[in-house]
Length: 134
Image (cartoon, rainbow, N blue to C red; front, side):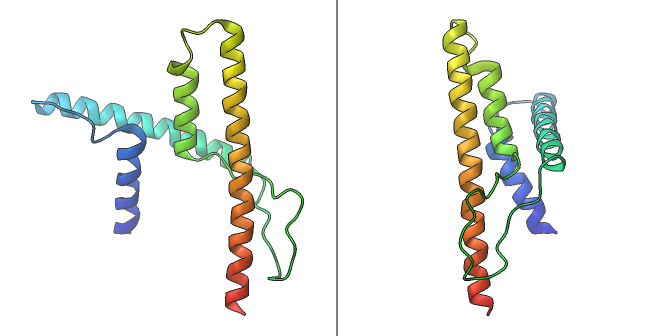
């Protein structure tokens, strides 16, 4: 259980900058920590909603099985939700509309490609584990 707590704390430090504060008073630290944890909760809820509507992963049954044409995509993760949220709220606000639409489309396509690539890597990882278990 402690490992999970440590892992979550490390993830919150890197995702929502829980450790990036320079405050002198407890009240300021408490406000920063509260806002960071609220942001992490929002991202976790977004990832959980996407995970519930996401199909089950395609995994191999046999170590000699060839990869399918499409392994699907992994569900949205908290860091990926943070990256896309940051992109849609701050990164492109001063751009002209055609450039903004093109940049959003490019980042969404890249995110989709990356999630498909991670699903394909997971499939091959599971196939390798099946070979070692036999």
